[in-house]
Image 1 (cartoon, rainbow, N blue to C red):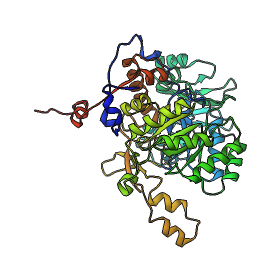
Image 2 (cartoon, rainbow, N blue to C red):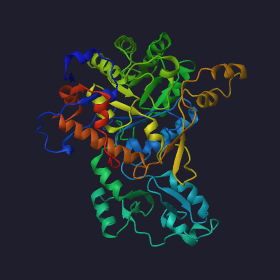
Image 3 (spheres, one colour):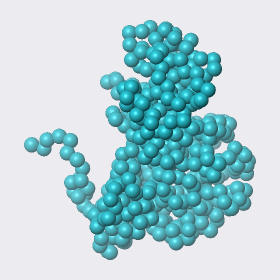
Image 4 (spheres, rainbow, N blue to C red):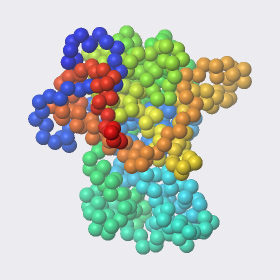
Length: 481
């Protein structure tokens, strides 16, 4: 990456302060751009979901990893729950979507309670042999008693598609039969998954993030303060693919010691991400300790109050640029964590040298985040989101500790305890947001004449703009006359 004006190198900049200059390009199509991070993880999309309780869970792990990204499960989960999610993710089909499955004797209300858990918004009713016998959608509940059994309201004429068909062939079947969704069945007629028309297209556009065994990737965040040996041993046993050592201030002795210990316990080949940091000196210490990936960002997150509370942090673009420059020279990789509100921000982080971008708050308002969908006074769907340094998170994290110690820790909150994250129409699913991000980053690469992310970083020319320049780039949503 180069600055349009060399004097701008010394400025402390965030994503809103900068822009990409268009350049000569001979890239024929945006679809020719390879977005694989090439960071040794197996990801094919440079998107990592943040280890936030309100964001990262089982459904998020399946959906994002199936499209090539990675989800970091939070350190606030019990090891039993982590093991459950890791195992569930690894047995997921890399192409077919996971269905909501119920018995025909279940009630309409039970189905309605579950239907917002998946973006396809349908329930497959199966018999005792796990063979589809019906489909239920919200329209089947119209003017029906909520205590009715599904067998009395479901659509019985189920059109299934064989698991041997390609996504393109399944799409054609859905198109010809005017269907939005169909169960996918194995040769013996048992349920293998479901596919939608969008899902068929995505299965061609994206490649799943797989490990050497062909399973979807998993990553877990680990506390550095206590129980590190036991936790890492358990995570190794259940086959976690990446360890993330996570604390708000990553450039401290405790973190460096934790990285060294983790490297000795997990061996030389497993990726270890450590953070959070914002400068070259911290990058050097963590790489020397054994980290392969560096998590960059102090205070830019949407649910974080660190900068406003403490004054500590650094504008994110400059932090990513400096750490990436050192990391790339020492064969390490950077994950830019926080400050991302638009696809342009993802593109700018990658241009600055990041190999991947971590997103949390943006994904909180989706079907796939762990919280239940709620409705406001106007009937709009939303989910509650909170930061990992908020009083709410601290209280949950320390509920089994000494009451006085818990009360002390609640004084040190640096996050938002409750925010309504609305499910935006047309972007209710995390996959809808991934589509927008991917389209934006692909286009940014073609504007820079780049066919992959390494070329993008090498060729990107970044300029600095005024606040008015940033405002000028926003679309007009209403008449200005």
